[in-house]
Image (cartoon, rainbow, N blue to C red; front, side, top):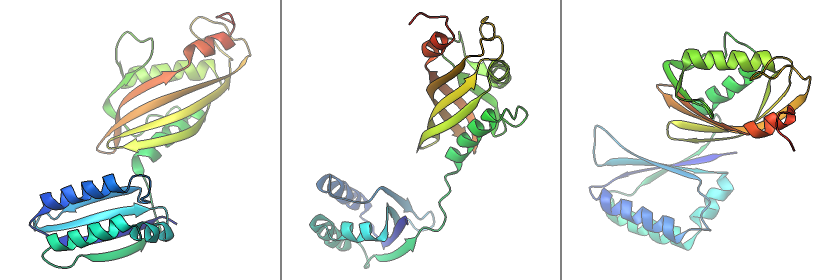
Length: 229
């Protein structure tokens, strides 16, 4: 079970503390078990800071605490604080990453050919960057592209991996389908195809507002018999 530790402290020497944490990160490379750390400053009290540190489990957090470097840094950290920091240990009982879920839902709906619902969650000013396209594609253009693909193939997307960073989500996917309609002037072949690719989605206010697609178009054309092996 994922474990989170909240470290609550007060200091007027945050820049020194920040440099101290940089030192800890450098000294514990290859040994620390923390996977994510966020530091927040209280808007109503600029000397009040809360650090949120994530670990794969409570046991991993304790192993991290047992590192000699962690002990030394903690002593230096206490010296920079107006009072002794407090710690709150939390077992994570719900972890919902909303942007990746929205991206995943797009692929799931596209694979089920839910035409009316596929682009729910997209902003009205959505822009898409597609290989081979002479320019950006807007939301209506993206709908048309999807309609062309869904008419040409029985689509089935499988999400392989997702990575989220800031306001962007990268999804690595595999597409499988049967060529059942005209595609780029190629009549239906009945051929079963697979194609891999990645899509970056950028979010604004919880909505997908931009997308970048990369996929193995040459490999697809080869499966359709257009390109020689």
